[in-house]
Image (cartoon, rainbow, N blue to C red; front, side, top):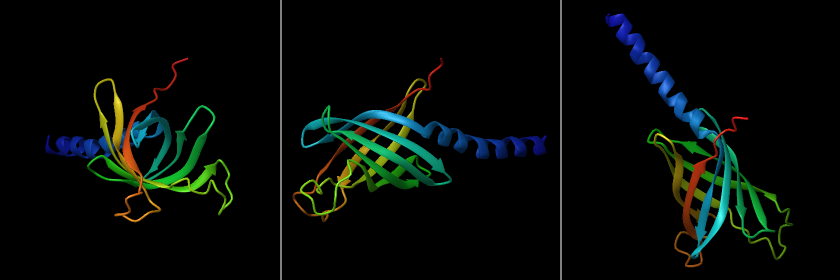
Length: 150
């Protein structure tokens, strides 16, 4: 009986975190807030161990999309840090007038209920100092895009 309980405990410790990781991966859609404005925001996440990689999409208008490659870390308390790394779209030459697209740091929490999977938190601009009054920051709210059952 004791051996069976130990096996059950071991399985729970191994499987439960993997269930969370599987639910974290995939496409998420929602909003990003900045200066009182709300923008459509999407992220596609992949997870390997504690490392997270992904792509962020911010729709600044119907015709302007900013796409960034991002990396980050998963923590045991279901929080994660995600960092914009490389601008993927639009391709902008360094020093051009449009070279001011900020890279962001995201501090996010994953939560789930019976029907919903949610990531929410805040973001801030990485390229300006912590106390710079022009440093951009805001809130994020995302919901998991459910897999098609077609």
